[in-house]
Image (tube, rainbow, N blue to C red; front, side, top):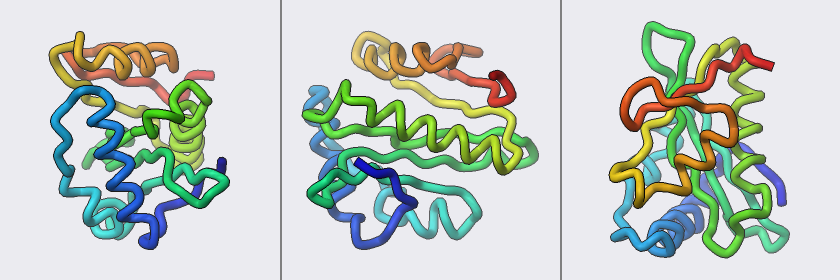
Length: 148
């Protein structure tokens, strides 16, 4: 598995993977509009989006971020891992790639907005807690990136 910056030729495969991931979680799959315009929504404004690509050149995960205007903080978006590839370190690798990059460019904190009710999003809550994120408001979590 390799993690690469977003490339347009993977767009449809990424969208399919995200919809499958949502379906596997028992959610009604709907398309997040930003996934149709990753270049414009993330890259063209100076933010970033990454893809996890497996040995067969298929998308098995993704994550992006958008800067929070007027701060040195960002919001992470769309961290998904293909359902049959979970618990293999892909989500952790994507998160670590994003955090390392963010530290390198001087960002000081990463925020996530988690779903509700918490019981339906238990995987997200457990994942981010495991990686040092803490709640600062209901469903809003943050990690200071200056921590070692």
